[in-house]
Image (cartoon, rainbow, N blue to C red):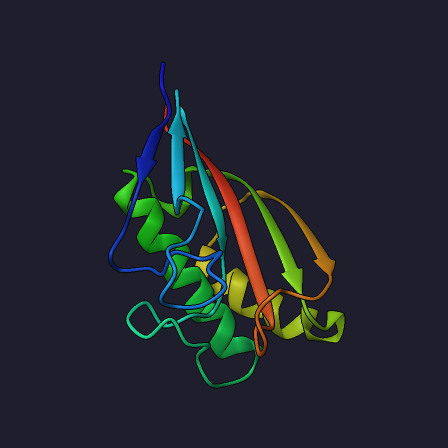
Length: 134
């Protein structure tokens, strides 16, 4: 089965070095019964600028972007089986996890959360995920 590129206008496509140059990435790719989402961060879908605020605000925007791409691929957070999270500052973990738990609303996933330096200035969190559609 060929891969299917998934695009949502309600979320930004990441991976660009400047906003005028197209990204080399897909927001998501469906391969068989799996949907693989590229990392999303706290970018405004219209302006592609990092949203203002703290880790809580950035986590909400990042999860909204992920949810929009999932929806475009015919999935919801309930179908996510794995997530990877990168936090710029690991001291933000408790606040990040509180918002994450609220948004997940009882849904369980496997997840890895590491500290690192997301590539875009001002980004405090980036998340990618895999959803099972079968």
